[in-house]
Picture 1 (cartoon, rainbow, N blue to C red):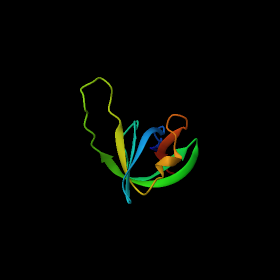
Picture 2 (picture 1 turned 60 degrees about the vertical axis):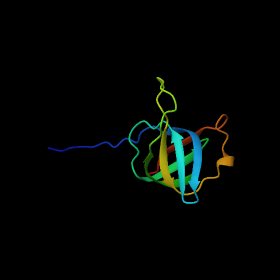
Picture 3 (picture 1 turned 135 degrees about the vertical axis):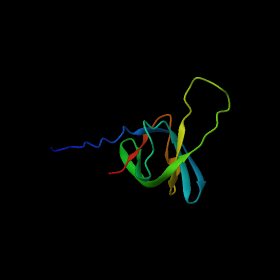
Picture 4 (picture 1 turned 90 degrees about the horizontal axis):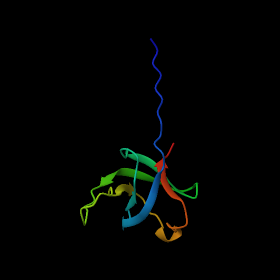
Length: 99
């Protein structure tokens, strides 16, 4: 009997914001499809990789008001990102698992 496993990368996460917490740590805020797996993730600007960050997990976010919308999630990464480089209203900013 032969088994074949297909590993599918989840679709890229659309990034809503980038928050530099310290010189070594940054939060990437958005709506990932599934669990965030620790390891290398590519931050992309309009389809071009601008940084490869090391994801370490997720930060817990608290809701300010009770509503029906799902809260965004924050991926905790090691590294630095220049937030000024991104226009979140005009550019397509995504985070996806680096291959």
